[in-house]
Amino acid sequence: MEATAVSSAALDLVLLLRGSEPEGLGRPEQVTYQIETAILMGILAEGDRLPREKVLASELGMSPVTLRQSLAALRAKGLIETSRGRSGGSVIRRQIELPDAELRAKLRDASTESLRDLGDLSAAISAMSARLAADRADAQNVQYLNALARAYNEATEEKARRRADSRFHVAVSVASQSSRLTAIALQIQAELMTLWWTHPGEADMTARASEQHSSIIKAIRDRDADRAAKAAELHSRTESEWLIEAHLALKLQPEGSV
Image 1 (spheres, rainbow, N blue to C red):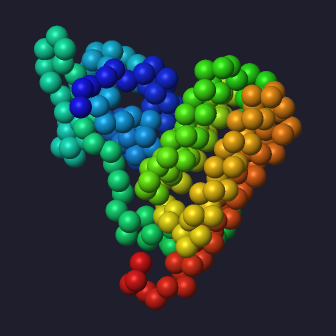
Image 2 (cartoon, rainbow, N blue to C red; image 1 turned 90 degrees about the horizontal axis):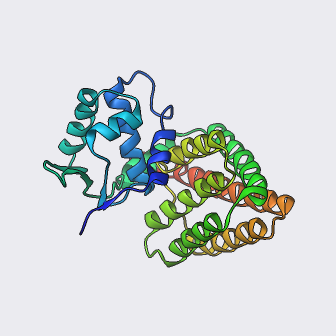
C-alpha cells in the first residue's frame, strides 16, 4: 500500500487526544497512547505517513529526542515503520484490533452505574455538538458525515462499523467548531472503543444506527438545531442502553466463560 501524508484534520484530532491517557504516564508514553488510540479509532489508518520527526515533535510540543522514544515503542509493537532519507518518515502499518476476550472482560467488569454515567455524558456532548453543528457546519462537514455513514452501512465486520460510528460522533463535534467539545467527544469514544459491542440484536441495532445517522445529518444540513440535538441525543442513548444490556447479559454468563 502506498503511503499518503496524514491529513491536518487527523493530526488535529491526535493532538486533542492528549489528556485522555491513563494517569501516571511519562511524556513519551502519553504520545504513544495518543497515536495508538488514534489508530484504534481509525483516525490514523494503515498507510498514513506521519509528519517528519522535527515537524511532528513541534506539533506535539515535545523535543525530537522524546518523540523518538514514542516512535520506538510504536515500532516495537509493529504499528509503524520508519525510513530515513528525503522521503522518509513513519508510516502506520496496521490497524489495532483489541482481542475479543479483552473487550468482553472490560464490559463485564464495568459497573452499570459507570456505563450509565458514560452514556449520559455522551448524550449531552452529542446533543450540544449537533445543536452547534446545525448552525456552524459547512458543506465539507456534511460531506464527511455522509461518507462516515456510508462506511458504517458498508462495513461487513462489527469492529469496522464501530470505528465508523465512533468517528461519526467525533465528526459531529468537529462540525460544531468547538475544540473543547471535540476533545471530550474523543475521550468518550476512545473509552467506548475498548468495550465489547457484539450483541444478539446486532442486526436490529445496525439498522437503527443507520437511520439515526441519516436523521442527524439531515437535521444538520437543514440547519434545524433542535431536531439535530434530539436526533444526536437519541443515537447516543440508544447505544448506551444497548451497551448496558450487553453488559448485563455478560454478567449472567458463568465465571470463566467471558
